[in-house]
Every structure is written in C-alpha cells, then in structure tokens.
Length: 121
Image (cartoon, one colour):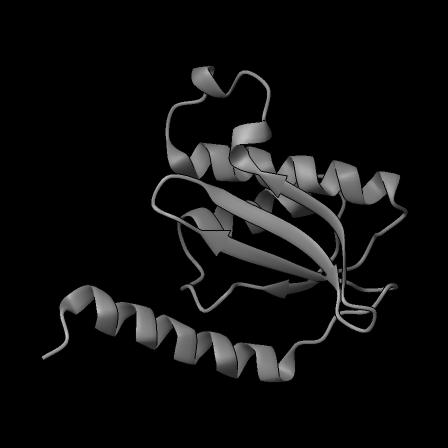
C-alpha cells in the first residue's frame, strides 16, 4: 500500500505532465518553470527549443533573506528577482509553467512578483 506522500507526488507529476503537454517555450517566449521544495523555491526561464536555461533564481539567492519572514514573501521576492534577470536578458514575455502545483500560495506569489516587475504571461 502506498503512503500519502507517494500518492501526492504521483498526482502532482500526473498534473505536471498534462500541463507540459500544452506548454512550450522558445527563445522569444521562454517557459517560466517553478519547482517548490519544502524549504525553497526554484525558478527557471527555459528555452525548450534549444534545451537551455536562460535565467534561474532560487530564493536563497535573495539578499537579506534572513530579514524576510515567510516562504510566500520569499517566493514573491524571487519572482521579482527573476523578472529583473529577464529584463537584462531582454525577455519580456514568458509562458508560466506551475509545475503541477496548484495556483495559490508560493506559486501565485512568484507569478505576482514577476508580473509586478514587468514580465507578461
């Protein structure tokens, strides 16, 4: 019998597969991929056509991370930081890949932070 965590992970991977079958990023409009662990959040701008990561951020890279309380606030700041890196790489439009996670909490905070700094989904 499978435990609860295994079932949750399999469900998330099934949802992620459904999302990924419809989402594709290229150099003009890369895919903003979100991975959420228990402690951190990892973001990447991916060009699927060439198989390259154009920019990446993990929330532990944020300056003054000790002062930011709460994972949702750190995710929001990570989204803003990724949008700044995208501006430097001359990227304005992205396709949002929520990675099979529900669009709330940290995933939603990433999207809001990125939008606030100029990325268009």
